Image 1 (tube, rainbow, N blue to C red):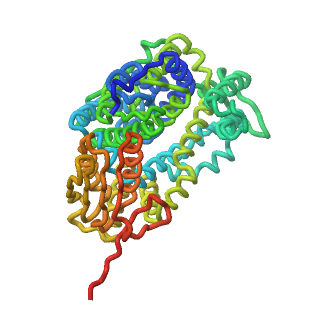
Image 2: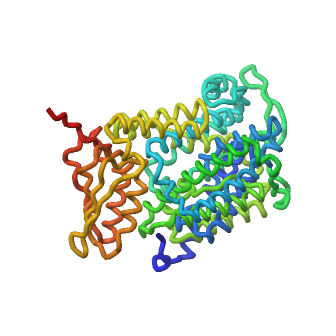
Image 3: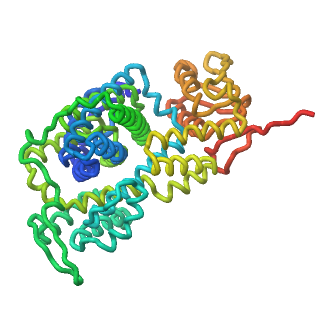
Length: 535
């Protein structure tokens, strides 16, 4: 947990970092909102609430709160389904769903459900994120090319990309393709400044003047290569004239419908899971090695979602890309998140005209880049190296999610994981509760012995035991010799826990795996004990 003693505010460093994160967040907030079928300003509303309110509700020190690409799929589906053809009605009903999901997150934080992030198998979570990345690319590729697709489902949208390439609007596509080239190219440049300059801001510095040169703010036609094309303000960001007009209010009249309940569950589950995983990832990057209270962070996320939903904003999470940029920019405390929200508020209040000159193709390119990073080919290779069964889980979650929806995809991955555990010898009695014995070797040394299995479904009971070890114990011996199976999720979490203990000047020693067979050559792969047949 984050201690007050470790809290050393440096307002100058946080101000600089908050400004740099603001430069990255500005276009992403607009793009995520539009991709979700929300008004563009809705993304900024969420980031402002995340900065000015969630910061002081227990938010993890270095996380940036705001809208995330990972929830685009759910938000868009909610607007379409709850609106039944009316996007405005769907939007107002969806922000009502966001408010209710926020209340549930607050309740979950009070019953200490922050441990939810430790339940789901790693491969399933990454498969879900990869599916979200593919869906984002399938939708935004057409926006970057200036073409309106006819398909609506992800696999059909992917299949339609060649058609959109053949029918691209050249002026719009020029902005989209150039933006995409900058996003992929700048980080690869062999110059020190390329690592420090926010690529999304470079994209805006190029795309906005280019859009003005092509006169996108005025509707007109042009001829290119014997074809006739139309461009105009519809290819630019549209914002209300004042901050007061930017606010919208929820419609709670459809909350008891089956569709609303489904999306409440999806926003709560996926949003909480992604936010908790992001907060844990940011803790691992924190130069001061602080540990966030995930229940407090979930509380901050829930309060932020309630306020953002009431004002017409997108759902909020702890966002990993902006949080990583925050750390790399030298942030020291949660005030960096506050300043990033403040700068966004000032931009919308004082310079809305500048925002309305941003081409949608540039925003689409930024989302394509984000989606590609979520579903990068390197992710497939990384998972394969951990084990073939991990790749099977990853791909199953990915494919089922693309073919159905996120809840079904994650559910399919979890069920498959349980079946694989049974196939690999895990006893049924040990799947959902681990039998653990512990004894004191001396006043500073404790020994724990785990029986049956140590897998994702029973890891929370093991984690509670580890968390309950008193500070006076400087050495813990964890004996896994009596387990039939230790899965990748547990191996990975124990690896991180060992590092945490080491940083705290304590020792966590994992023993008893010599008789287990690794399922792959990777150090974090699952371990299975061969069944010895007795004569």
